[in-house]
Amino acid sequence: MEERLIVFTDLDGTFLDHHTYSFSALEAILVRLNKLEVPLIFCSSKTRAEIEAVRQKCSNSHPFISENGGGIFIPEGYFPFPIQGGMRQGEYVVIKLGARYAELIATLRQTSVNTGTSIRGFNDMTIEEVARECNLSDAEARLAKQREFDEPFYLLTQDVEAERRICKAIEQSGYYCTRGTRFFHILGKSDKGKAVRLLLSFFRKVKSSLVSLSLGDSQNDLPMLKETDYAFLVQKGNGEYDREVLEEIPNITLAPAPGPQGWAYVMSHFLEKLAFS
Image 1 (cartoon, one colour):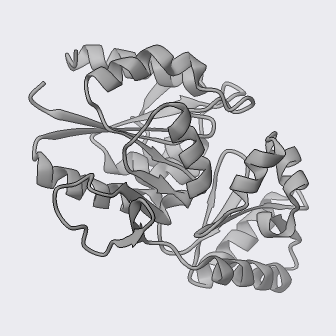
Image 2: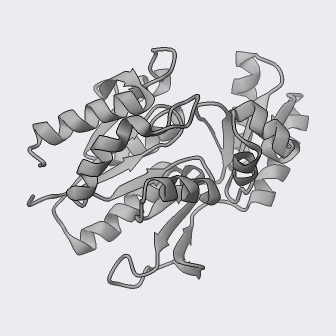
Image 3: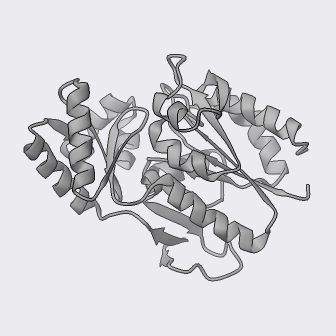
């Protein structure tokens, strides 16, 4: 193909099943993408350690974006030029866009006090609690707690006004509040869109003619979905679509099924429509 296709995807509830975290429904389409040499870039609220585990399971060797755009991890030697702003860290060149984790925890706790809103974040939870809340094994929960740029949290009171109040207070403190499939998140002035835009600039240095595509299911995917040529909103497990995404991108293409089933459907039809074969 003359143009190079690049795919950015969220993980939880999109590439991975919301309940089982399986991507078995994608095996055939992943083989096809691999044959086409399409870079599949994971762009998730998950930690580096969690994404590495998924990459290993599906033999993915491409760059990835962790914790809602907080960090970009590029395998050493992936691009044939030095990565400006990158730092060597193990087998990666890492670009850190997010705030320090300790700053996020301090801000979240102070915001909770100031607003009188009780919250509980991953930092407050044991490995066993994270495993229970997220339907993970203890080993998987341990990876989920290895956070660097983003703190997931939930409110102890189910109150729409309290949600609005704490998110507003977080943003007034100079940080960003967003919502994923399961949790709210506090992060610095980074998001998936900024990380996607930067990575695309690297790919364009190698091949100027690119077609970019993204798939997500939640509000925190919105910045990513806005940065690509094509964007797909995956159905949630309850059959609904994220309201905030629909309001911001009313003409976004909708996947007719949740999670991996919807992901595979739209990806297969996209490849056929644009004659990527």
